[in-house]
Image (cartoon, rainbow, N blue to C red; front, side):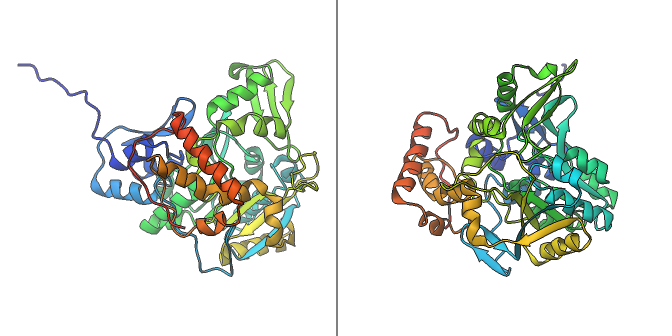
Length: 425
């Protein structure tokens, strides 16, 4: 009798099933780092990176995924810092500033402060390389993870990339290298790696620094293709693409094969197109400002009399938030080395500078309650002061966000089953 080989899929991970079944994946790649060869990140419709399980998981891997996955929970913010703000979380120092290297400042999405800090880490030999995201040469609107080891490589990767990325997925070989790295990732990437570093001393030694940026969410690959369509081109015709940078805020710019380029403003690309393609997990995120990072940077927007950011092109300026004491020391060292020019910033002005982030934090509890009412799973957000944030919102605004989320669920725009999650204010 001829033996028959089973073609059935491997037993599904309960943690992954809960995340994917409820549309909670952030696409960070932590699960693939925990179980290399057994989980791989793959592009799935409508264009997001999602884990694909290739083989069964043991109990240890399952437990580590359940603990680290930002789709299920976030590490509570560190309370042992000089300051802790209801909206903005822990911080030891807050400044505005810019890179003194004018080429870095111009190429970056804001003032180049993040690039300047990374350059200081490399040149001071605090790290051997920087793990960050850059354009994929085979598909310029998509992303790939790169390791930058010098100024020119940092310069080549400078600028925001509004497309899916999973920087944690392929970090395992770096742990075996014996080198030290700084990771630059989305707030959810940093939060997941921070949990994993608490579990694994080798990861802690490999990634002594974690830096991030204020994040408004990850758009799908479909969003990028819609930008190209609006520019009158297609992916196969584009040889280079920038979402931002080369000025502040910079234009979304496609360089076409055979010469020529087409562009649109940041307001048109992000505000008009990409923001409409953001994944569900990002819309209910408690931490778009990277509370788990050592340092986080953002646009130091100037605003008009109504409080709306001004997007006219000008010399870039960064908001720089040192989340802990070692981050504050890094910031001071980079300034002292001549990499940065900085000025103190009063946290009282941050909601006006970053109205989108402030509004998202204030509206979050209402959105989560809308999901709970309709039986949807939500991540566990312990220690994020969601009730205090909601109290800063007018009742009318909270009601609007609550009903809006209920409507999206009833319209079938939020996937998932009826198992309930938990939140904590």
